[in-house]
Image (cartoon, rainbow, N blue to C red; front, top):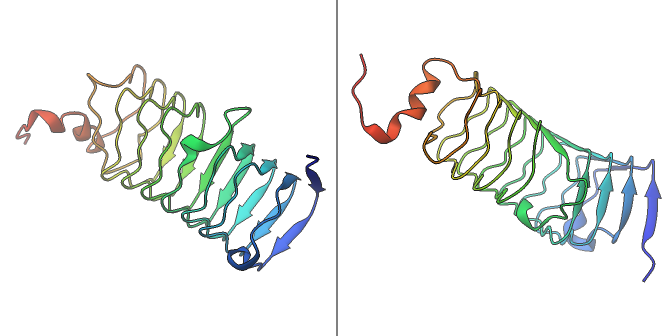
Amino acid sequence: MRTNYIEDQVFEKVNYTLTGLPVAEYDNCTFKNCDLSNVNLSHISFMQCSFDNCNLSLALLGQTAFKEVKFTNCKMLGLHFEHCSDFLFEVSFDNCQLNMSVFYQRKMTKTIFNQCNVSEVDFTETNLSQAVFTNCDLSGTMFERTNLEKADLSVAFNYTIDPEKNKIKKAKFSMPGVMGLLAKYDLTIK
């Protein structure tokens, strides 16, 4: 089956919840103010694309390819990124809502999370080495066997990370956020 190739297109204010997004390879395309919530994005490839002010909540991501894709001001609740294609997976998030999403076993080195709500997200066994979390709310987010080496969480907040269950060598933290590393000990610190 031959896949359509769509290049350098701008899709604006399209509601894909009614029609779905055609299976294709989208290269250098921009999606602005589009509704992709609950849409099946399986087997679609996005290369150097950007999503601005889009709703992708609960979209299906079976073997979806995100290669150098930027998400800005997007609502992305409950996405299962662990189902995406591994090949050249690279994303960045700016001012996005990623609550209740799953990145299980994703390789996400140097990924940028800027001004995002990353609450109740699952980063189990995710490689987040050198990732940057700038002003991100990480409340209830799960870090289990996660590689956070050289990651920057110095201005992230509300995180709880067990240093015994995660790799945190040379990661950056600051006060009072670093208290999230001691949460399991139920200490009283004055």
